[in-house]
Image 1: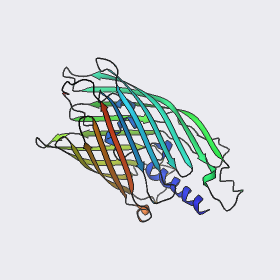
Image 2: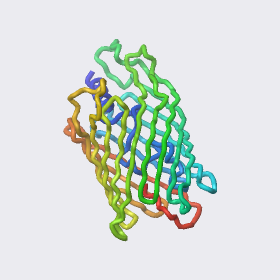
Image 3: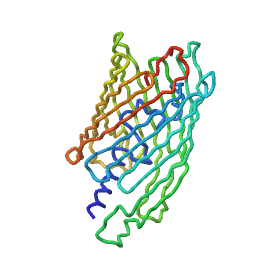
Image 4: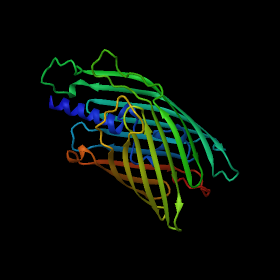
Length: 325
């Protein structure tokens, strides 16, 4: 029964703070994982790019969330007007596992003759598999109706829409994911995991301080109309066009009244330190550490996130607008 209670606690906290699994995956290194939440990001870097990120949340707690993503995207035409992207998302929380596959299409409108400004409109479609493994519970009552016997599983379609604008120094994106949200398990089951529509707004600005130092403030807002509105505020410094150093403050904002939201939730969540290093023009590696500033702080060892990016460059032409977003 203790294990059951831990899993239930993780699920409740996941809904309240992280928006786990179907409520919308989110990474601390969100500035480098745009395609995971916005299909219009497909083709932004123009060269085909592979990104892999793995997140271990609340380490030290049995069954704590584990999240991963693989994205691959680029442009497919000479005018760079069409971007394609493919996404695989995986999320595990206690006995629950979610795997989602998405294909994304983006049409990229060129807004000036220098091709430094584009507005991209994107759509993504795919499917998600949702599984609850009842064998991972260890109840004291073998006939407990709240515990699944064996696996409960369902495959559901999923869709997303987004828009993304960028210039050489500024970007802003808005998107909606899980737009076909419904119950992932039959309603007659006690343990029902549902998708939830989530909406994202993100923006950032690149400010050169001198020839070797750039400063980029950026933010991300996530809203699912159930838990607190998630707000990430970030500040990043780029040294020598090679090393990113950044910090993020994540908080849950009670922006308006929500019937499913209790009044005693903490107003704050976590702070994160982020480092990204460009080994060369084609390879990037990043790491972030999140420190919780809520009741979980004393019972877990923080959150670790590792990401890598590989760009498959075919042409040797100089990029007029470097892709820092």
